[in-house]
Structures are given as structure tokens and as C-alpha cells.
Image 1 (spheres, each protein chain N blue to C red):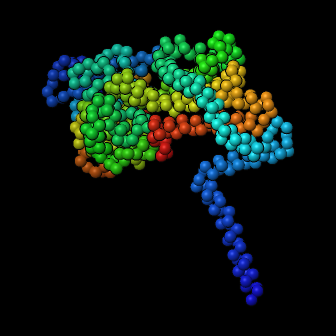
Image 2 (image 1 turned 180 degrees about the horizontal axis):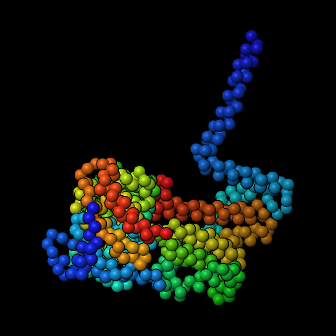
Length: 277
Length: 274
């Protein structure tokens, strides 16, 4: 009686070994976002271990940082900090986006505008902007204006140059098509050139937004300690390292979420065919 | 097959007399067209008449300027010298009496089949319901009913070119200009498409000017074939294949007259091939 049971047991074990792994694969395959979560989880695990070794007394563990993050969220520190940080960022990105896309498209459409403006932005894009931030302080002081300028200086060149390249690389056959059906110059720009250029224009906006985050944090660290920059500086000066790291993590989270939102907006509004593809 | 090169030459010599001749209604006149790009002479002194309601093919070795001539007729390119007249009026740019079908389809990837087909009408400011009704009719006519809401990347090459054709039909132009429309379409689809094109030519009663580098395709679909010489492109020969098109497509492809015409054109073109 014992032998058949064992056989049955063995028979049962063999098929279980396969499916036991496969549901995990199947689950991850069906939900790609689970892979991203797994990757984040792995990163946090390495962080936790590195913090526990510890690699430096100023390097908190993941759990300490997460607790500090929660504390700063609950006591309203983040809310006040971001209220102050987002102001120059939103104004600066708004101006850069309108001005940058407008200028870039104009440069792509007109040789005169190209010769007039392209060299300036190519130089600006290559210049180490952080070095110019003390100059801004010197001229415009330590208020909102100089922080907004810092954002614009970092964000504008990449938005302009992407817009310009995007328009230059529009499919010439589509432009011919629009002309052959007697589209006006305005229809050509609005119905063909801008939609066809929009993926590259939006890549520029995403890069510009990322650069804008760099700009505002640089300004808060180098010009006036306010907002999230102040949160970082303050907690560093009093050696509250978990809080300092939590502030750094928060800015990464905010910028990642903003970029993802911009990407979702682009897919929804401008390129509906990409959603199905 | 009728070789009318000599007749055409005589017509040019006595242009005034010939054009007043009854029976030949000319939709597009090409007069002394030359085109020079920098130091490359693409076209030299082209004189041609395109009779109304017929399908005329421009055939020639690659680089002979046949697409350039078509784009000049379309008003997309400026000639260096000469004049184009459509329905008797000189061409200064694209016009509503002409519609172009592009070699690479030129479909807007962000727009559905419906919007692509209706695009010519959209540019004219026609209301949405009206233009969609017209577009729907031509989408069905080219055999794409049911695909109105698809995007171009969801279609095969042959289907994409049907969208391009429907878009050209939708604006109701008198003259359709087709620039190697089947060259980016695979062989099986091309044959099917050629048969459909013949059906549409009979149905739509428009003037077609068709550019191709395929001799078989030219003989199969054309009422009249204009053979251009190698660069600088000139009119080398004009041939009217006399093929009974009421026969089935397969019968035409085995027809002796069809095969003779293909052979005659090949003999004429051979000297331009390296």
C-alpha cells in the first residue's frame, strides 16, 4: 500500500514543479508593471543592505528613509516645501514650453529665424549652466525671478533645439501631399508639420522638464535655501540624514511622475495611433 | 499596337492645326517643358498631350525624369522652361482639378483611414458629416469598407495605397496623377490592384497619368504609353497598345498583342539600359 502512494506522490510532485514557476512568469508577463515593481523592490533591498553594513554613517537605510518620508509627508513639511519649489518651476516651464516650441517651430520653418537664433541656443545647450547661476543672483537677486530664470535657462535650449530639429525632419512627402490638395500654409503647419513633429517636440519638452527640475533644485541650493532645496540643506546641516534622503527621494518621485504624466498626455492627445500599436 | 510617334511629331510641328482637330479632347497639355537641377538636366523640351478620359503612362529607365514631369504637371515642382495647361488653363501650382497619388502613400500616421481619405475635403473646409459621407463611398469603392477606423500602420502596403487612391478620388479631380503607386506593394497585391485600377478607370471616367518603370504594368493598364529616354528625359516613343480589355485579366496577360507590345517596348528601351 505504501509503494503506490509514494509513486502517486512522486507523480504529483513532477507536474507541480513546472506550474509552480509558470504562474509567476505568466503573472509577470501579463502585467509588465510588476517587473518594474520587482526592479524597484530589488533596488530598495540593496539599499537596505548597504545602509545596514553601513557604508557611511551619513547613509541611512531604506526603512529609516521611508519612515522619515512618511513623517515629512504627515507633518506638512513636503506640502510647504513643494508649494515654494513648484512656483518657479511651473512658471519657468510654462514660459519655456510656449517660447521654446514657438521659437523651435519658427526656426524649423524659416531660414532667417534659424540663422538668427540657432547659434545662441546651440551655445547655451553646451554651456555648463550651473556656473551661470551665481551670475543670475548677482543681477536679479535672490527672489522668485532669479529662480524662474534658472529654470528657463536650463529648460529652454533643449526645447527649442528639439522643436527645430523636429520640424526640419518632417516627412517631405506629407508636406507635398498637403500642398497637392491645396492646403494653405497655415493648414500645412497645423495639420501636417506640428502633428508629424510632435513626438520629437514632446521628447524636447520631457527633457526640458527634467532640466527644469535640475534648474530649480540648483537655484534652491545655490541661490536661496527655500522649498525642497532648503529641506535638503537644513537636514544635512543638522545631520538628519534619513530626512535629507527622504527629501531627495521625494524630488525624484515628483519629477518621475510629472514626466510620466506628460508622456501619457502626449499619447492621449496627439498620437492616438500609438496607443493601439 | 499602334506606334504613333511619327504622328505625334507631326502634331507638334502643326500644333495649331492638330489641336483644333475634332474628337481629341485634350485634358493636359505639356508644352516645351525643361527642368534643370543645378547642373543636371532632368528634362529637355517635352511636348505632350494627354487625352481626356484615358490612362496615359509615362515609362522610362530610372532617373529619366518621369516623376519630375509628373510633379511639374501636379504643380509641386516648377519647370525651368515651358508651360503646362490643364483644361486650357496654365498651371501655376497645385489645383483642385488635379489629385496626386504618392509612391510612398503619404498617409498621415496619426489619422484613421477615414480622416486620411477625407483630408483633401477637410483642407477645403467641408463639414465633417458631408466629407465623411463622400470618403465612405470611396473607401468602399477601393475595397476598404470596414477599415474606416483603422490607422495606416494596421494596414498592408496594398491597402495603404488604396487609401491614397481613395483620397485622390474623394476630391473629385478631373485628372489623377499616380506616381509609381504600386512600386511599394508586393507582387500579388500589385496584380490585384492593377485589375482594380482598370475597373476604377472605367467607373470614374477621369484622365489618368500614371508613372511606372514596369513595362508589363504599363502595357496592362494603359491606353497610351509615352516612353522617355534616359537623362535628359525626352519623348522617345508613343505607343497605343490595342488590347481588348473586355477579356479577363488572365486572358489579357496571355494575349499575343499584349506580349508583342511588351516585347516591342523592351526592344526600344534596351539601349538605355547599361
